[in-house]
Amino acid sequence: MAIIEGPVIRLGENIDTDLLFPGKYLHIFDAKEMAQHALEGVDPAYPEKIGGRGIIVAGRNFGCGSSREQAATCLASVGIKAIVAPSFARIFFRNAINQGIILVQVAEELAVEDGDSITIDLDSSLIKYDRKEVSFTPLPEFLLEIVESGGLVEYTRRMLEG
Amino acid sequence: MGRASVAPGEIIEASPDGVMSHENAGLVIRQFQAMGAEKVFDPEKIHIIFDHRVPANSEKTAEGQALVRRFVSAQGIAHFHDVGDGVCHQVMMEEHYIKPGGVYLGTDSHTTSYGALSAFSTGIGATEMASVWATGKIWLRVPQTLRILVDGEFPCGVYAKDLILSIIRDVTAEGANYMAVEFDGPALERLSISERFTLCNLSMEMGAKSAGCPPNQVLKDYLGKDYREAPWSDGDAEFFCTMQYDLAKIEPVVACPHQVDNVKPISEVAGLELNQVFLGSCTNGREDDLAVASEIIKGKMIHPRIRLIIAPASREVMLASIASGHLQELIKAGGTLITPGCGPCLGAHQGLLAGGERALATSNRNFKGRMGSPDAEVYLASPATAAASALAGVIADPREFL
Image (cartoon, rainbow over all chains, first blue to last red; front, side, top):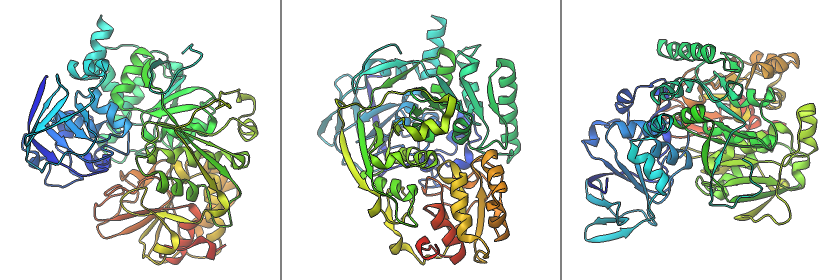
């Protein structure tokens, strides 16, 4: 978990939940099936265009709009491990953590292009790219525990057992 | 919760007084079972209200709803509303499930609405709700408060929708992220419960975690014997910031594609050709909303290009609007009545848009693709503006029709 690295998917500001997962698919409860529509509202060429990339870099207010958890689940299911943005809408923030996605809040939008590679070092709370280093405030410990469990389902399951 | 005070930024554990889900209860159930949970924490505190795709719009939806009905029955869930009772938030209010001062969670972003009844309420996702069903608890970060003081009276043709859209324009779509929005000031002594609901409902669109209006005589009159005292900001309260609005200075506005904070005065968009007008939703589908629209449309026919879709926010609203004759006028004028529920608001069914089409809606979101094709446009405005526009066939200033 300590390092997440690789080429990024670059998105803009105010990426809302209809762009992440259009409302017409809300009857879908199966995560694998959700993955087939990830980012479809941004561009119908997704999710194929994701091409195995595991990091999203975006602008302000990522995930604004609906409480639909599918907006986060489809990303987790398609292999997104981390999202880097200057701010996140609050329900999406919780949903993403609960699906095991690391959220990295940075002071300013990263100056990277689609396909550029970055390294997120969770131990030192640094993002490294293009010979630059950007620091970020790590998630609180108990949220990291949820992410490290693989999400809230597993976290709660262990809690109920324990 | 049992603590006398908390401070912004603190993370607390809360025990909700009530929790609400709509059809996404199906997803909650799936996650609840995946957690290995067997019994819900308290069946009396769980509310399930079908509204997003009612009656079922597909076999898949029907299967999902059937799964929820079986779970409701097996767990003895106390408050279940099947298709046709109305939009979940409206039903939560009408049934007096919400008590002032209570803590409520819902698997819908517009759960912020219950602040109209001086309760704390906020939206969460399905997995989080599954965890609440299993444990009866949730972590919450105590929010800072953005205070909005309102004075004056609305000019003719201007409504709560115009006020909150104007506020969202000023605050921006993320300006109240993680915050509690508090409405107060002399005008709150006059605003109706329905108007308070519109304000708290749409506060979500500036990122708010929760919203609230003061416990006062208006609330007392509405809740009757179910009224109870609720905490509210005192003289020592600290605010992130305070904004002031004079209702006399608000004018009709429209939120333009594809963001709710892209708000323009009606004069800038008047004349844009429309294909559809949607009158409904948890934001503006109540009896007073249908009445305002009906008074404008009464005795006339809507423009032949317009499909006017009317979704009363609840069965109760529909019955009241039938009794008052307002619904009849809207239907006579060419309107199409659909099941009380969310209707086309979220793009699931009952009036989706084709590419190149333009709609004006009294609902709450105009995101790209929200009501069908990503190449369609959605404009948001008050029921009065919707009615005027349905007559004109173009976006129209309601003041010219009153």
